[in-house]
Image (cartoon, rainbow, N blue to C red; front, side, top):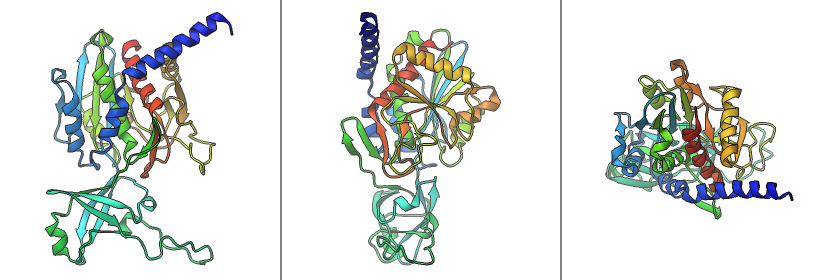
Length: 366
């Protein structure tokens, strides 16, 4: 190999490795992913973020539990935003037999939770339950002429181990309580894990890590806002509230890129390999990122030796609600497998590349 090429390659490796070594995003993710925060009930997640941000940042929090801070001055105004809510359910009513009927708090795939444990986050503390399975739910019926009715949120009960409504209420459960799947962090290998709520706690962790590593000189001559918003999964409501007063020039929504990097999915669309770097979402259901801005981000990543991929996906992003105010929306992501299930998979290298990219954009964006 040519000596110049060897030196250049070494510089890229060292640059990337040293930046990754400074990152705490992975450790933050492993904590914040376990904090409950169903859409509309994000208070505990906001508490977590506020508890880790330095007091001198003058962090603000509104009645909806959106959290944000702004540093620097001048143009351009750059906004980074990640959503704190997760998918789950809300207790709708308690049956006479002591079971819970729920309504969705976002689009968690119901077929992934049948017979799975859940936690009801009641006023007096969490109450364990299980999504009651249908009789014979685990039996295969390939010869049945008429297919079974679909298993939906509206059709299942949550069993609490009691037999009456009074017993359920004695546990502290009431209508309006949020319900989450009982989360387990599964480590497939060092730096590769799966659990519920990686969407978008990984984005929250990346932003928090970037905020903690941010150098004052990086924001000279520009304005930078970090925001953690609420109720994305149910309609971008938190971002919509922020957009009433925030008018950034550029918004970088930090959220999952729903990759088809899994065995049974077609690789013809949205296929970006897990473990190959951060992601720029070129096109999704709510936004088309200008090619000029994609190339700009890619140039910054190349300069810093940060691995980055570009892809198209379905779904929307929080940045889209800032478009009417004049912002350019440039969604950033990591490739995530098995989205909206209990085993959302993420690679540490992708998360740390994303954090490094956020910091590089702050420093180099003109």
